[in-house]
Length: 375
Image (cartoon, rainbow, N blue to C red; front, side, top):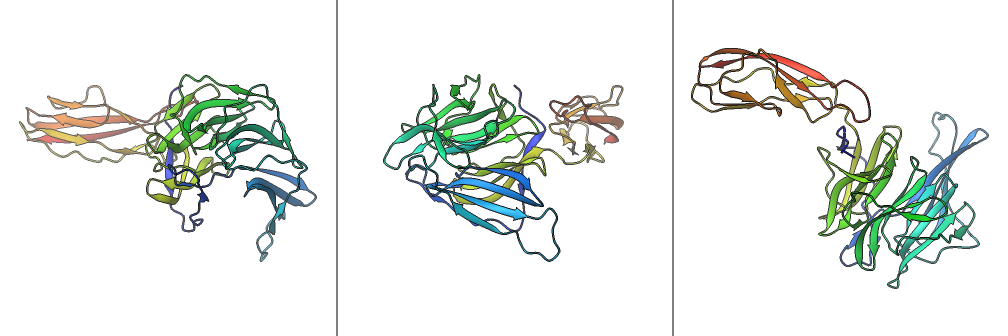
């Protein structure tokens, strides 16, 4: 699988931000682990109201928070009422932290795997939560014990995907899937380097799982990978968030972007917000409007510029163009060389962007006709 060229990370500059925070980390090599609680959001309509329930492991116990809202805003009304409610399941998993948890819509259950028991023990048990109680599962196969693994549901395959973590004191880079009954180890051609604390979520706009960052060897990571159900592919976005571990990440259907917040970087806790999604920078256009003059016998170099569309760009000049002898024009848009003859030369430069992967659309083009004077 080839990298997706039309997606990039963009830092957001909103005024209000959540406060910096952390969860105590027992690991001396990591110092901190932030935002590793995982949960699910589901909604259902009951009468005239909308009820949203979020379940999450909180400090070793189970609680729910409910939000009740009217179908339409009421002028002058305050914020919807919210509250946490501690649950009293008949059965619960043993105490732990750094377990991986995700919602499985194919079964309607939460799935929890592994974690750390606080006494030096790594766990590899699988539990499901049906909204009332926990049930320990007995799969035929299970991933090796670990904590800090990334886990999210993949609706494209109908499986929950688990990647990496720390097991027996070593970072892991294996990939497993849960089909509601058992775990299956995958054998991708390519895998991200071993790590724990990476952020992972499903991107329905591409049908891929997106994984970012984490902690591995030699330290914090800032790479972006996608899982297509068969293998991993490293992406090469033009910009990326700084390396970090334990950031929160989820897909925002209202904008069509992944949203990433916080984590722990190389210099401490972070409170920045980034989005990962389609490039929406407007139509492709050449911003260069003229070329500087050149001198016979003197080296010449000038880079044409373009904006918009979907980078990277490919440049060329129109056939029959009056390109000065001994000047060359590269596909990266650089006109260079040492001219040997004076004169005025009219040239038409063209540029195209990269077609959006997975869609049969024409590549955008732009053209510029300018004159270069050599004296």
